[in-house]
Length: 134
Image 1 (cartoon, rainbow, N blue to C red):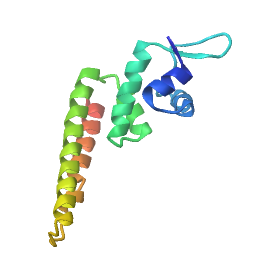
Image 2 (image 1 turned 180 degrees about the vertical axis):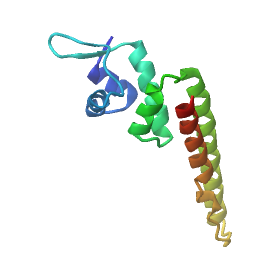
Image 3 (image 1 turned 90 degrees about the vertical axis):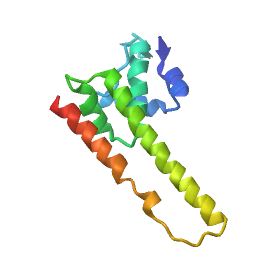
Image 4 (image 1 turned 135 degrees about the horizontal axis):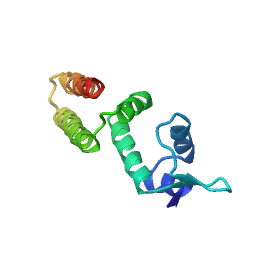
């Protein structure tokens, strides 16, 4: 079991964020000691990792809570969808980097399609909708 400050350091989040996640019912510690220490077990850490994957994909905390609290939530399926979305995000970043390289080399063509996030947003919307429907 890890204390809240150890989890914060491990995950790169603030203690305040972990307290807030508990307040809103997103991530509760496995145990609170008599002296008030919040302790997190492996199950809680796995849940935190899921939350951080969703956050990386710009899901709101409210969306994350709704998805993860759905009776049909499947962690393995969520990981597959998160991987798919992260790959799309990486492809978009690769296109942006390529555009920067072209611009540095003097390519005068103005292009803005690389900034388009609609494909990623559509996948996020479909994923959230799919979970709600299940």
